[in-house]
Length: 70
Image 1 (cartoon, rainbow, N blue to C red):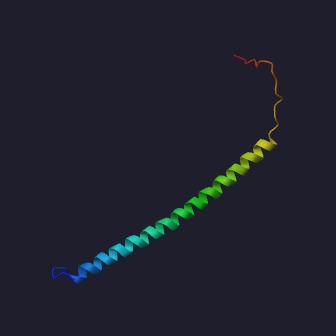
Image 2: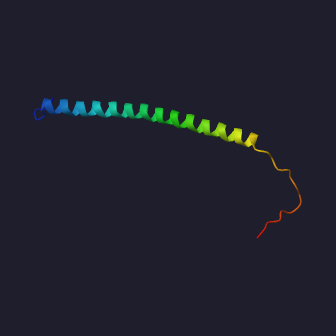
Image 3: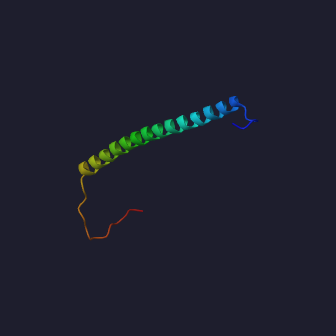
């Protein structure tokens, strides 16, 4: 060890690095959980939209121009 390096400072540095790695790992886990939840919510809404489209009666296609009331 270099003579001017305080071993207590090294311990603090190693603790800070360890904490940074743990925080990063926790952020990754939380990010995955958030993505999974969002995916489930979007899937549910997509299924609801599909159901609405299937239930909604379709208008017959017509080549006649559509008149709008002013």
